[in-house]
Length: 364
Image (cartoon, rainbow, N blue to C red; front, top):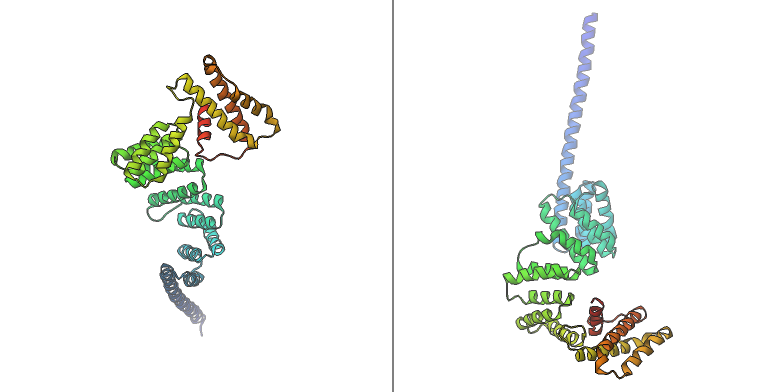
């Protein structure tokens, strides 16, 4: 064999070997893709089964199917989230938290995952952590309707803050969504009530007045407006609007009770405009007597002089010419007793007429 023919034979052999390798590689790749496609189909089937079982309330079975799907397609965010939802629905909060931890470790911006984690933590009683995840969900990424989903999360957070009586945080969230809330009467009344709970009666009153322009016969709006006026200490206006609420809803026991409370406050308050000197004197002494009765049982010996001064003031006979000055002195004593009482005695009821009158006189 000549050298040239030998060389050609060598290269032909090399080419055949390379071709064989390429064919085998192609076959292996094809088979691998076929296997991958088959496993993906199986994962998709298991995922669909898991979703169906979850919708039927078969949470444990759903979690099992979804876990199997995830074991085939590890790292699939949709599978992880759905598995966490199934674990949550099954009451397996720690498992759900672990699943969501893994998901958020891969992508901390996922809105649905952050919302799911907030709900899990809330169930576990970890409210402050849950609130943090709610905020992440608000600003997270949503594949569909990001603005709508963000608003829904805010309202869910608002409900949480209202239950927790977190007034400052609640007010901040309400101010953020005030202009984005639905314009229907029911939604606006709810927002007004939440502003009341957040300690912002001024905002609440504005909303309730707007509602009454749309729906002049709305009993809930009248009740809400009356509560806002009550919080501002405008008891006369509160009586008018509580009466309007009661007229439209005679079963409103709270409105009836608040009307009685407002009347008690107005009858007791010695600082009301229009009172003559004699009535102001009478009310001041009555207020001092009520304050003494409330404070005496729980004040210690350190307040003995103050208690004795109050008793002597009430026992003294006051000439008509000195009654104006005596009324002022009685009010001063009542305020001192009330301030001293607040540091040692149990807190009064929020609807205690004496407490409300004392708060009113202290503010003037």
